[in-house]
Length: 318
Ligand SMILES: [Zn+2]
Image (cartoon, rainbow, N blue to C red):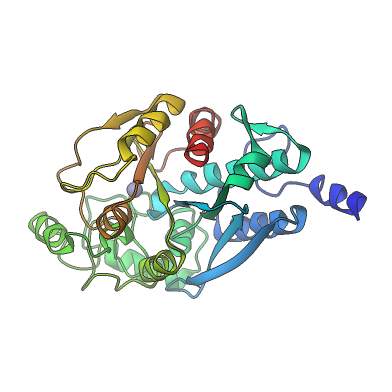
């Protein structure tokens, strides 16, 4: 059996070919990669926590037997798809190191999995990511284009952040949602849009609703949401000061070289981390990876990963 598993591990890597540039994380590529991991690493579980507007599965992988629950999500925002690639690569590096008795970013991988239960949701917005990557069918693309026509200043599809209904999935959570609505409506985002539309009511979008329900059921101790860009880590929401949040944030900043922001952005309401902090008073972070204009090119992957792998490992180290 052991040999069999080793053969699995050496199987061709669908998203991160040896010696080549990573492939872009279309939903097909992400599912293939997650299935490969589920086959290669007997200690991980692959499951579904919901479905997207286009009924694509929202998949997650968990690993580890420890009491501390750390949850990572990526690609709430469609044109921030590079976050998916970064999280998938980290998962594979972590699992591979745990299997071989190695380390990630200098931390013993098997120990991280003994001390934690780590869960990964690498593609929160599969439909939107496929739209930006040009991987949707004509009719689905046409319906998005129709929404985008009302916002001619936003490039299509490169400026698309929302789900296929034109709802911004990270403006959907019941944490100052009314305030987010006021701000975004004043900016002109009063209906379905490529970005910044808060939706008709909190958790109206199936992708956000599924992640919220899954989070409530799983009660993580720490959450990290990966976005681009800015090389900054946000840890505040309103007047909350979750125990240990600043200290862990400082470790994340030190590991990555990213700045730990002391102030929430003016429009930082109704996001996943805001809601997580508000409802649990536990550490929740938004990490804005990389620098440049979204979507960041896949050629930025290696440089971003160098910064992010230590950050993601340190989050599990506590
Ligand atoms: Zn974002």
